Length: 382
Image (tube, rainbow, N blue to C red; front, top):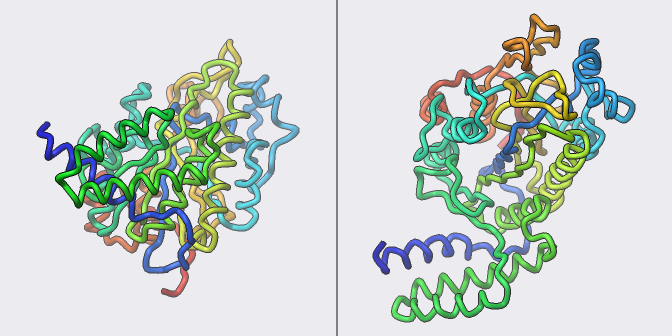
């Protein structure tokens, strides 16, 4: 890559970030509704997360997994309960700020994490590495988005309205690198100015995060919210949380992961403050896990899972989707939760209501999806 192009790319990325001063929360603006997508990489086991306690087959399929949490589950409605670690989500359900959706999939019919995630992020009903559904949504919305990740995920590729940010783990030697870059920029005043602003933002962000865990999900969520508050062009963000591939020792591992997720989502709400009422968060995963526990007290790659829609803009307190049942004849391939709806369909309803996108725009974003016509967001006057 030519030196000038390299410098321009680096400066452009920092220029967007440098507009954020990571400080004063903005007054909520109904004209700038926020959308945040949280990807759970590794395939979430929905039956250990959004638990159908009414299912007589559940304990037979999962004597150890279900038996270990059944006394501590957090009931919501219709016989479903949340995992004990999801205390904030349970509270949000009671406050009508959470919509769990049962038995969903993206339509991906394989069992590869990498392909499943690529399929989910492209949103085209096929894998396309250079065009992501969030990027297409931002193009239609006319706003910008940020991925809290080390690189641009597929979901945000194909648009110049996206960027990424992640806390640096460099030690003090990083200062020498920054100075070297400034030296390179000495004949490019605009780039030098943008880079210096970016360094100020980096210092400010570091002051808001737990320096001992710069990559922990709650700290990343906190930084994400601060960036969105500080830059009025950022109407969208993407967060990632991996570690959901629980082939063994699932119970203790999900205790930790679900608590981390719950704490991170709570951090988003706390930092967003009044802007929470203007925000929708979607949480989804590439596919589900087997209904039956395996011999190592875990579960294997499956099909149907669950997703969550949360936020102050969500008309919650209900469970969405159609439950397929857990009898052997009701399972997909006699092993997995049978999906009864598509993740994209729920996102179409969400974007139509929250971002006011029309059918033509939505068809460009999700060409294989169909609107369900469900009420997702609160109908507030503009």
